[in-house]
Image 1: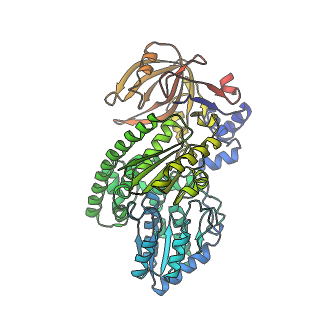
Image 2: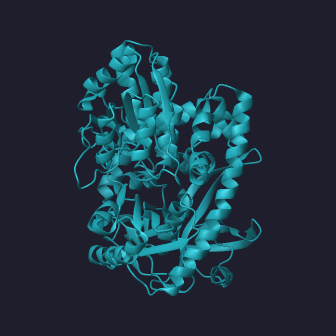
Length: 590
């Protein structure tokens, strides 16, 4: 495991004071906003209150696209929505189906089978859709790289409309109308696929002069997809999730209510974490191991009994997914251990399930702080999933390796690909070479970014609730991390069958309950704490609700002995821990 560095960005005292006075913020909350580029009071206020959604007219070309779709609706043409097998693709399909059917359209859907069809459009699917009479094909969350497939659809007599948010290929664009936040100049370029479909649904309703209620009732799906697809939660995306979480809390969809019950998610307390770890994995499980049609049916059904049945099926599939994922992770880690250290990894395995390799690649990238590509081999073909680290653009990397690939697509942080077995070794060499040329030594060192330095006397329920106002948290807006210096630790205990720790933290004359999830097995950490002394720790301050009691609680991210240059005991026992200050912070220096 590489060394770890704390990164503390500059934070001028005057900006903190000015922002705190202007908005009535605590010094800690003001530090957080200044370090996140929100020193201007107007910008910070807009962030805290939520930015408004942009006008539909900012999406170039959306009016003629809506007019095209409405022509087919009015003429009774069969319309097929081609989605994807993940949460974003399923939710996008449901949103457009709801709207088109409310407008009286003859609309159906097609979700590809991960094993049989692969990602996106393919020639066999086009032939099936032509045979069943589709006249308008609308893609959601896919299609931007399907140049040949769109040409085949047009040759078969279909009109095609592409709605997507992924990066185009280097070959150009499909010959079809395209709704894409980057290509159409939309101010929020990082919309997920469901958000693009939602914008089209709004435009269709407006152009038809119809009741907007059916579209607005799908804001629960919009938030679900935005969180699940890990798009940056700032700007309009953050507003979408803020509004959508409220819609999820009171959703009338039987499928979502059944899924929450199965995942033990309290609708009244639903947040982005409950979506990420409770709802999204269960919806994804169908498409990962089998077909995503069950997930779509769950979102579309009005039958409560059927919703309960599907939710139970998805819960079982999710348990199976976890078991499959654990096996692949174990085998992949064994491959990593057998290889010399390198700036990126391409791993392949016989019998690996293509539906879980993306999750495993994500875990490996987080654990080793390197970009990873995992390839599931089946005969002469391999299907791969890639996950990246902050400083590495996967799409650019795969484009550099294009001669060795059959196809690829995705975005900066996550991508999919197909590769011939015979080209796998050359692809791996090209990918590692590109990673070595792109990633600096510093980029390969994991960072712990600190948002604010806090004193023990500042920690409490009031501050925890104030920091919660910065939610929803996620990609681009991570949970707040606080550096607490020269703290003591006492009453160290294990919990969760020894997997986790709990303890009391003492700093500046104040004490606070703290937990360390996943740290229970780190013997060096426990021995170091038992030896006494002072520690510098990076924590998240949370509002903990348990057994009817509400209290503040610290959640450990990283811990080190307070002496500069001492060994690290937070990420990996005994690893050197360099502390890097971007500049001497006023609070830190004071």
